Image (cartoon, rainbow, N blue to C red; front, side, top):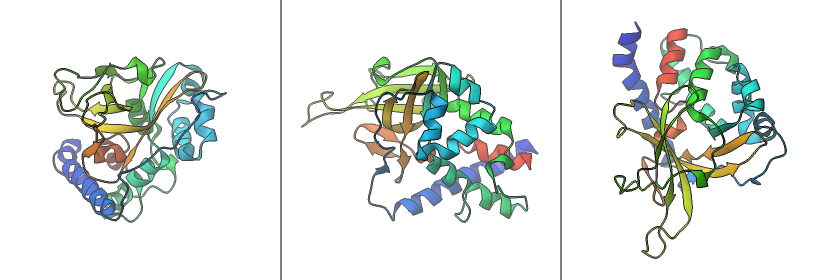
Length: 254
């Protein structure tokens, strides 16, 4: 059954979600939704920061449901944080291609509360955004999407062994390369054997520093795969887990 869904339904899920996001983006003029400004230092642990920020109310609940609360309180971590908006767009209610629409069309129970998703599923995809140790933007190498052989960024293994490419993009000023503002980029790599197939996300706010780690906030895309300055941004950043597998796993669990 899982092979059938992976072969036929998963591509439909992914394409449907992307189409929905593209239609929605045509109604907006902004390039992306900024994660907001924050003081670099926060007097509390990572869990306390998520609970204190309205942009992460839902993410904080997911951390608890995933059984990761103690890790977010006590371990040294770097978290590339999706906002609550990503969860809203992934689960949805009415939009074509969202999880609840797909569940309804398949005759399965829809997601009414976050606890309707199994803890191990929340945990599996939460760990894609999570890395051990504290890493601020200055700790990552340079990345140039247009010249990756020279400036490839770096490859990092996540909390659950998922692979990501992370780097700092140096933007140009008046046609002079690399002297402008610097922006952090996070790309999930679905297949480690094919690192050229990556799903990039621009970082809206970086280097938020609770007492036990660093949080970098992922931007929400409102256009197609495009560049914010010199930083590549994909629709995939709007889906929890990036590539539609989360939707497949929840459907299979019902």
